[in-house]
Length: 231
Image (cartoon, rainbow, N blue to C red):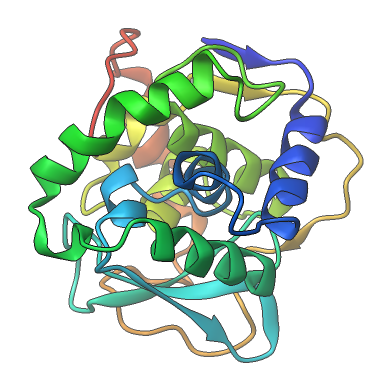
């Protein structure tokens, strides 16, 4: 289990980095905050093919397209963000100008090009202060943990992960409960989903808590090994 003692300060620092993003920032520095803010995979942020669009009437959501592992019937689906969309998109566009050419690379080549650079930015240069040494993919789990705390989630943690991370099976979501974010207590909760119809993405946004028994059973049977996954 990775414990983030200053979870509130981590989120604040991430937002500061995105708000102050400029052409002087290196792509890896911006990418770390974009990963945490959106919960997307590293290649989805850096491969030059993903899209992030505004959602009418909601500043903390976006329409994401370009998921590496497809789910359901839709190429795009709505995800919550840990910052305002305007801040995210501005920083994302700046980062994309610095990573031009990745759209012609395979995802494997994008991973090979940036993985070690981001690991160094995260754990050596401390590009995200307050985040303990971890794997890049752990930022995806930290995002899920933050969303579960900061948003009005009616389902179990595993089913919420399934929704916001785009998993086809709940078993893909069971390896994301190893991040503990402290210091976020008392924060006013935001809606998990915007007050507009979501694209049909194969997941029922109004799913009732009748899934809870299934989810808890699956969670109880999961392994305690925290092996990095590309789920």
